[in-house]
Image (cartoon, rainbow, N blue to C red; front, side, top):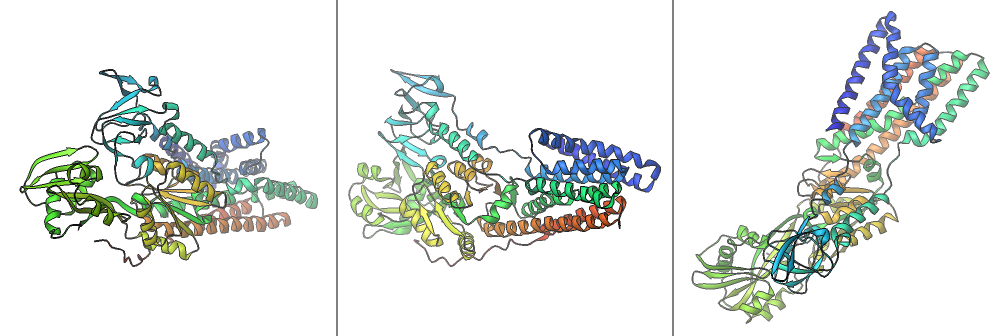
Length: 617
């Protein structure tokens, strides 16, 4: 990567400059060589200062250039070099923290489909998506990505909608059902009537939402720059005052050297760098430096459900009989054997959760409905309501009544033409989710969950975790509007892992994504990434960010205190430029040591999970 190459060059320049400064310090004949690092490291600072001046702005660079000029006029070349190198070191640390660009918008390209299967009479022609118009019929084969938003007009299948709604379970679609661009067709071939062209498709709307969300999100401005004009004004007044009071231009220029804000400028990047190092050591990747300041102010944390608070994979809780005389274990074994032939995620979950028993014959997969077959001479059907209505209508009403509103996903089971009950599946809550939520609430943070799942599932998980609120059946628009509401009342944090979370992640003050299971767009749209998906680290992250902001503030205060003391000594003539440079550099070193304490700060104690008395098994 080019950025990494530039960073290596930057590091090399700083190291070479330090060698020159050391040689010049111990050999007065080489003192003028210190002008080399002054020019090399000071040139970018001068460029920034001139650019700000042309834009009628004042920044920390303006102050540093003034100090460099003062040092050179006093022939204090080593002091000038030290100032330039320290500033260059601060810029390097900022670059190392913030150099990785966002990838969210690039991830959208992976969802776009260039070609679509246009149905024209009895022929199917591969056509550019851009040329397809509203009302055209498009055929989508198994395994393909839906190219445009439309309505199913022929066939049935199962659609993976997790990218759109975050639903953990594929949705069965039939004639009349809507499908969205970017979703995946798992099994059966379907024909859809195009309802929106490419400019108005789900993928296009996602791109627009991401752009608008990013525009509405404020970014941190360096504290040194925020205060630069005030510090520059103060430095100018004090310098002039020193000259007026003493009539000694040497003292006045010494004040300018001492007042150089190197330590002040270093306080923020060194604090951020140390905090980022602490995070990295604990499996947390900082992608945006402003997230530290933002996380310290967050009062609301909004969680996605699937893959964030839950494990993101379905597990079977077993068979529930709605007919008398049914052997639960035997049914679980036969259904598991049947589902072991299936490619459906729910079928795989059942097969993985139970020991298959029996020999399967005449296996059939019915897209959008389920599977049927014969296991040890017993006709078994496992699927949705539509499959039961066509193959096992007897007993279906009872099974529907018992399973209604249960906070689980159900797969109905038919035995020899009669619906005998259902298999229950759930996406298990992570063991650390309860403790994380409890810890946040104990610190006065408002907690909320957004999920694309149904009300019964969403409300059940929210109740189990004792969240303050929950919204179910969410779309990306719903999540974005929710975050916008909270942002209008103060800083919020969004924690998610799916593409459908991306706009909300970007719009929130701080967006946190799951690095292991997270979608590329979610990771690219976030400010912080949990590499190991450990949701229990949210409270610790918040504590570390609060401590980091306190440490940075303390560093700023310390630097100003040292500057004020040094300035006073310079005005009275008690110190000259050399001692002023020592005090100046000592202040910078003290600020760096203070920031380094963040490297060893332990705020990551994982909270003990609250007792979970929820069970369906």
